[in-house]
Image (cartoon, rainbow, N blue to C red; front, side, top):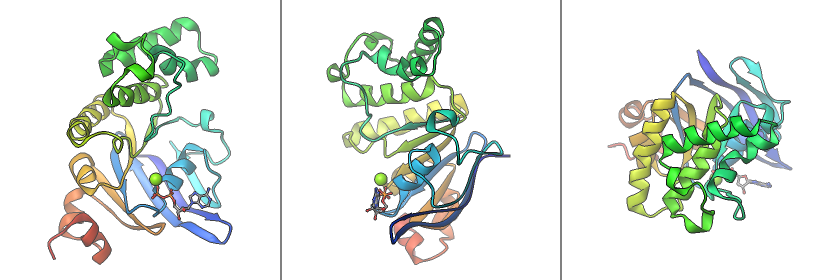
Length: 238
Ligand code: ADP
Ligand code: MG
């Protein structure tokens, strides 16, 4: 069964249409990479799913419940951003627990959830540090920890590795993928890096100018690209 179902999703900014009637489903525990060149609408698409951006048309379902009219916090979704968006004055533990505090969880429950997430992410030694005293990879883990503590149905990532150096980026790819499998987390992972998508994803959705050009497994896209755009983007032999 599809955990995420998107039907005819559209977005316009004034006269500029940036998402054109996209249909897309993501299965339970599936890792979908959403790829496409800069400006093709990836972030806009993700922000609509998270409820951070109003839709211009179409429907979003999570577990068959229409979530269009729910606030970001009411949706069973957590998003990890490129710039981490950590609070500089809070410790790692406080950063991870903050959303839970706002949502009214007890101090005890927050402590347990933060402990569990920091165990999964190897963050225990850093819980009392501030973000400024962390490396880029550690900050990225804290950003993931903030998502994990909420135990959401769906994880959204928006280019989470693009601020890291090449070596760490490759290491974090497999870390994220291992974690995603362990949690059986239904995931939509935005990247403009086709190698990242090809190595990490169960399925890839290729966007171009707000249009979904093709959805398929990495092998399907590589061997049977739907058109020249997909072939060029994926780097298929022609
Ligand atoms: P991507 O994440 O793939 O780089 P975006 O979703 O950020 O693409 O942007 C898609 C298009 O929408 C771009 O043309 C961008 O300029 C435009 N856009 C994004 N946000 C806004 C906004 N708030 N107002 C007007 N145009 C926007
Ligand atoms: Mg973007």
